[in-house]
Amino acid sequence: MSLDNAFMLGDSPVARWLVENSPINIAFFQAWAWQGINGQSLTYPRATELTPASPMNDCGEVTEALPTVSQAAFNLYDFIARYSICAIDLDRVQYPTQLDAAMFAIAKRQILYAYAEHIVSPTIGLVAACDPARIVDMGLAALTLDCLDDAYSRVTAGTGRPTLIMSSTKGLRTYRSLCRAAGIPQERSPWTWYHPAQGRSGPGSVDSFNGTPWLVNDFINKSGADGEYIYFMVTGDDHGKGPTRGVTGITPSQQIGKMFNKRQMQGIFTASGGGGGPEMLPGIDTWVSMPAGLAVGSQGALSIIRNFSVVADCGGDGG
Amino acid sequence: MPQPKGGGDAPGDIVNSNLDPEQAMNDETIKQCNNCASDGLTYSLNNGRPQVMISENYMSEARDGLSYMQQASALADMMAQGEVSPNLGNEAAHPSTPVELTPMFQPAIAANDWSARPKVGAPKLALGNFTLAETDAADVLGMQQQEDELDFLLACGEFTILEERTAVIRYLVPLQE
View 1 (cartoon, chains in turn brown, red):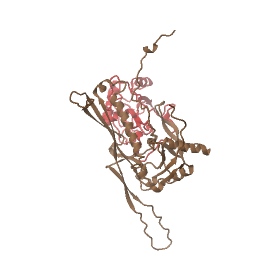
View 2 (tube, helix red, strand yellow; view 1 turned 135 degrees about the vertical axis):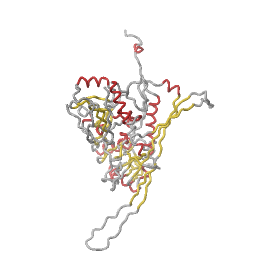
View 3 (cartoon, chains in turn yellow, brown; view 1 turned 30 degrees about the horizontal axis):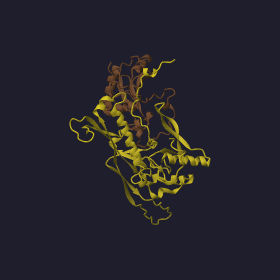
View 4 (cartoon, helix red, strand yellow; view 1 turned 90 degrees about the vertical axis):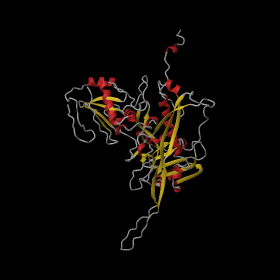
């Protein structure tokens, strides 16, 4: 007969940090390029489609064919999270994780989620910045590989091919389903993934289409409404003279390397039910912010396919 | 024992040395160093020259609160004491808080080292562009900073930090015996 309640002899430690139980897939950040800017917005001067110069074999007139110039301005927003810690908790919750450190990590995730949601906002995100002629609208019809290829080919900046495809998990599953239905191997490209077991990044592969990596942002159509979006982008801005000015995240130059600002104030909590006064317990209020936005240099760097029906889910929610 | 090259400005050059070049550093010494080193620091011998590989996470934490010169000085002082605190930044550790396990950047020569394998897929960005892997968002995104872009070197009694990415960092702090 074994010893009853032997477990009582053991320690039951709590793991460090506050573990996010329902993380949202924002893998696209791995390929999302940022640039620092000076000022509160970035404005790109843009030229309309250029008319090719004429070949000549005599001394005739050379006609001027100048583009029309316009500007596109992209503003910074401040993404802010806030948390408060009661002094009692601050005193007691120190091992194995300092409460403030855990909450700071959570706040950073909240801010990154807000940014992921911002860039796919139909009103102020990439959709609004996209040239309408580079949007393929499927009218809620089924996605096809040909239409996917059409949208892909509407990216003409850089070398004429996107460097990042971004969709929701459901959009990606729909693409995989198309490949399986067509009997073609699911295309994958080399990629570097973080392996928790190794505690470091290592080689792996990623879904791809026409050789371009395909990464998920599950804030795309997060509500699950009809119609999905897939974004094709040339990411990055080399500040060059050619059409190599792609899609970037923007942040003030002084934020480079340190995206988050943390500001703390001592405060006094209001008593439950109102009131409050010096007899209330003090605490710490913390604001964590990330000034950021998005910018699209050449509109040729962005195309979208939208309003297609997605692959069906399998079964219920298991519960 | 190889002598410090001295004087040059190229990455990898060693400016000066206050350590007796004849002072012997052997495997046993390195082993002892590693026994007492904090997570994020790995000691090794390179052609008889002692060096320390410093993880980028370690430096990021240090960078939060101190200038590079202060970091170098603090690290040098702590190494002289044989103990290094992993928390120099704005997350001051409670005395009983165990050291957080940080991904360690191994020397590229280490056997079975992931970072020594051919790099695939990691975006190489244009000048002025960066990914969150190079920022303080990396720790909550499951992204690791690109260790092969960095070369931290501690050699022969001087503390020389070489960070190619920012091109400038180069400090000299003699170790105390």
